View 1 (cartoon, rainbow, N blue to C red):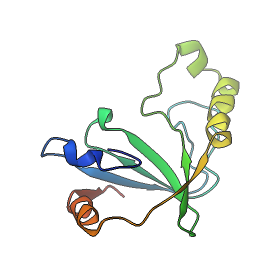
View 2 (view 1 turned 135 degrees about the vertical axis):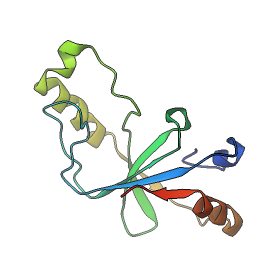
View 3 (view 1 turned 180 degrees about the vertical axis):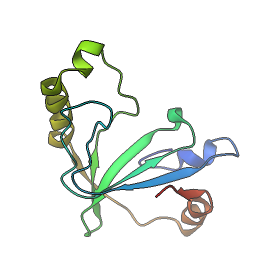
Length: 122
């Protein structure tokens, strides 16, 4: 999967684009206490496998998205994972480092290919 470009087309034939919607307030880190919630409704895009990447974004309804740098795996030592203050700081940094990305007009054929492999999970 790629934020920009057509990397998904290079994946094996079993590529799927999974789409998950989360309402504002959903914890960024769903596994550990203390997580900050998303400030707006977001969409998470993932491939079928973890190595294919993740994109979490909210639409700005103006041809741009706000992209949140959420890790695909929450790997940290147990003492940090069990520290709500650390989790709050870590997840707040994700909000603080969000970036606005302009979404270019897509190639209709590429868009059709993505639609054909899309799986709406909720």
